[in-house]
Amino acid sequence: MGNFQKIAIDNFVGRKHFLWFKEYREPTYGMTSQVDITAFYNFVKTNGYPVFLSLVYLVTRALNEVIEFRYRYDGTDIILFDRIHPAFTVMTDLGHYDNCDEVDLHDDLRTFLNEAQPKVAYVKSGAQLAHPQFDTRYDQFYISSAPWIELTAVTHPMNDNLFAYIPRVTWDKFHFENDKVTMHLNIVVHHALISGKPLADGFIKVQELLNNPDRILK
Image (cartoon, rainbow, N blue to C red):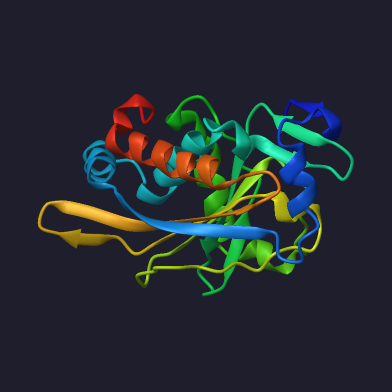
């Protein structure tokens, strides 16, 4: 895992609501919002970038800008990571999905793609399906997509352990209408660490970068 600092719960600014919501039987919640990806889509197509991986990169960069999305809980202390990395699903050539969860976020898209593309190709081959699946890192976002259908809401299978504090991100089939391209973005978080305002800030940051993809996709 990357660099982080530990914050004692007694010194955590969100202590009151952390202690309250972490005891809930179902402490996670989510929101789904339509986002405009027109500028992003046109930019990656013009520059020949892979759409899915570029979107994984952009969303991960955007959510890192909201400090609450970098909080985790290790069972004793609040952990604040310097950077959160993407772990995302890939549909294999065998028709079963698998996880690509060893790709780090980098400061530029090209370095990210150079690392991600061969790992995605390996996962896509299905060779990894014979390996057991383990959750080992807290410094990740769990990202998936459902490009076959339009979504207005999403539920997620959730861990009954500390990995439940990891945000889940999903988007659906792109919708093309006239010159506009949109999709639905779903984000599910743990209420003990992320309340409604920072969750909304996450959507806002994503939309800001979607509107200005040249800021980071270069």
